[in-house]
Amino acid sequence: MEGRSIYRVAVTPEEIGLCGCWQVVGVLREREELNPEAGKTSYVGYYVTSLSYEEYSDEQLQEIIRQHWGIENGVHYRRDVCFEEDKCRVNNRVAAHALASLRNLAISLYQYQLQNKQTNVDSCRSWCRRMSFSSAMKLLKRRG
Image 1 (cartoon, rainbow, N blue to C red):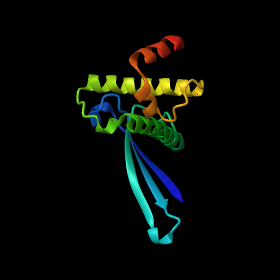
Image 2 (cartoon, rainbow, N blue to C red):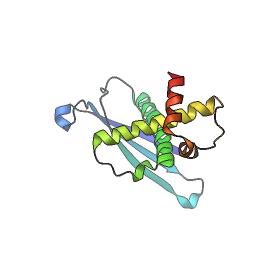
Image 3 (cartoon, helix red, strand yellow):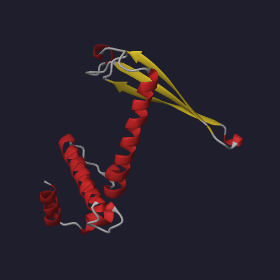
């Protein structure tokens, strides 16, 4: 069984020192394991948002947070498994952003070929090993 409680505080960017931040949110997650000996686990996730306090109800904000993590975890997992993104030690923000964009492009091209039955390679990582720059450019030109 899992339960979530949300706690919110309206703030101003000046109060918190974060440009555009209008709310601080804490989500308490409690989980009771099926095995009674395992007991209960809980932790709090903290968030800041540019959404004003009045914009959404507690329930709506919880749903927004859950949806965000579903998307974020899926994309992050794929980038880390295919490209070992967590091991990347590039510390220049512009370079890191460019690498993330290239990783997303590669994953998108793989998905495109997979959905259109243009490849039978079973993983993005294997597909990337076989892909050359000229092949990728041909795919981009075909899609555009």
